[in-house]
Image 1: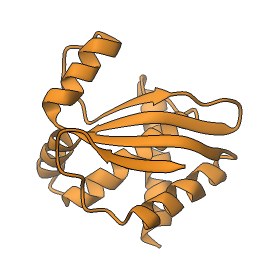
Image 2 (image 1 turned 90 degrees about the horizontal axis):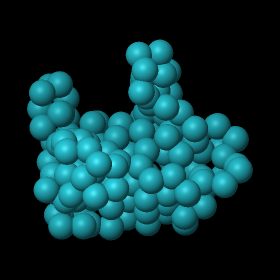
Image 3 (image 1 turned 180 degrees about the horizontal axis):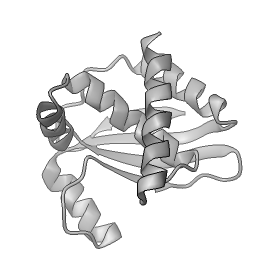
Image 4 (image 1 turned 120 degrees about the vertical axis):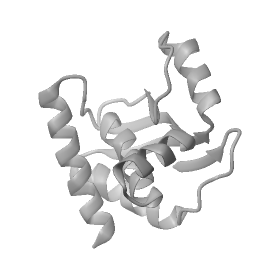
Length: 138
């Protein structure tokens, strides 16, 4: 079950049914089933607080994924900092919705086992994001 929550900001205008279907298709593509996935959309202040409290990182980020997956069932809490997503979209010169979709699926890809801590794994992650975005756009 995939749920969408607004932490301390307005919930982004997304078609939750369409996004949920997309997430399920991407998970299946990687031979995973969706368990309980919670998206928590929040401000930069909140994501910084989560980053400090749970990861001991003192910086802003667009996404933090807490992975509770077991075997082939993906589950987790995915915090998305909407202000950082917005500023990243502006910096990249792309629509906010496009960057938001990339971040939404980025969290799912982490739950599917993809990492992004090295240049090589980051390259693979970007390829998987692009593949997933093509599924949404077709």
